[in-house]
Length: 423
Image 1: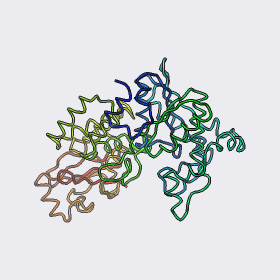
Image 2 (image 1 turned 90 degrees about the vertical axis):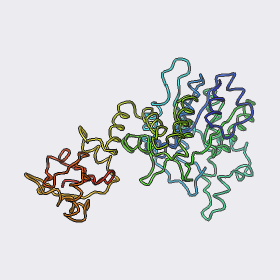
Image 3 (image 1 turned 90 degrees about the horizontal axis):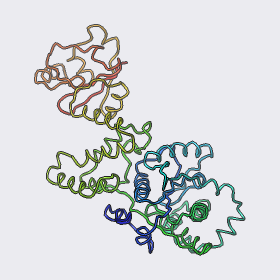
Image 4 (image 1 turned 120 degrees about the horizontal axis):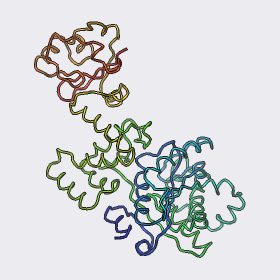
């Protein structure tokens, strides 16, 4: 089976240029995907192209991750309704450093036969003169061609239009393909389906200037079953940097995948084989409440992105949400795990020594509406402190109940979590 067949059964092919299937089966190609350095970290929306490069490498091809140190100074209008904010050169340099580290978790840069490469297009885009660029590249494109691009047409129809800066972006990307072809014998570019026009522009430029054939393949844009953009949550983007999105929240993002998306995501984002995914699909169809497919998806992607230790910690933290006793956990982890739970504050003075009656604490925190309701909840076994059930109505809440003197987790019923901050 060729990598094209691998892409096909995983439903990763939206459009491919003529000859792609045959050349991927018969030759070892050098292929690239560009990564936009608009932030210090990539997000989960970048995982599909990253995995595409990793799959190419596993099948013996030569992957290049092209970092947009040059094009990032301009901004790609594809899929955008407004002009991108321009970044400084210092911002771009800092962002590139973070992206390099993240790509290293997926691509092998030490492999003997087909090591991956990371290349910055600033190497040529910031050194060529404007007159040379217009003469050697611009003359091969007509304004008619550029106006026909969907990303440009959409912007022209809007009141703010499109700047000349972004209008010329497709020429820069085409020039990238040409430079990679000349310097590294790169013959293929991949990307999302919104990049098809930019990719074909590069293929045409190589054909016209070098008389050589180049190839393109684009993958579907990932949209979840609810019709919203993949990777966006109520709290913002889901980042690959653990300092921006913790491994626990990253794990939870994947674990909470909609039933309608989980099989597709298993194909897109994991290394699981066809029979393994088929077995998970069967288990999902027969026992969806077990969420085994989502659990496997979360484990596979979290391990790949953050490593085995981070996965183990994320699974342990996730178990707290289902009632496991909260032990050997840092205050920072508690704040992260229960960041979306209702919270309130109790003074450190009130909890010192013998502390305060638990019934009063439950009422003050809003877990119970009255001391009477708090008492009844305790008597029925419906209250837990740090996921340990409490039934003694005389129980007092003290600093000894706190985690590192900072947090106490109260729970009413099965999922009524409340985070107490000790202030």
